[in-house]
View 1 (cartoon, rainbow, N blue to C red):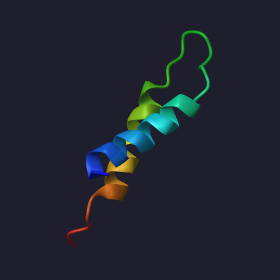
View 2: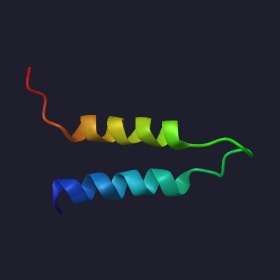
View 3: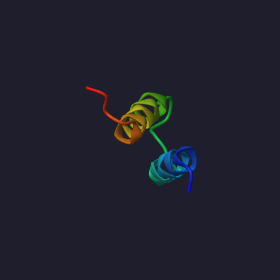
Length: 47
């Protein structure tokens, strides 16, 4: 499986497992943080 599909599959798994937030709240920040952490995990380290 390509790297992009693997990242997308992992992200969608996390997003689908989230519960609905309380009224007038959002999961956007958390979803953004999760996407960034998944991307960082899959990027090769170039130090």
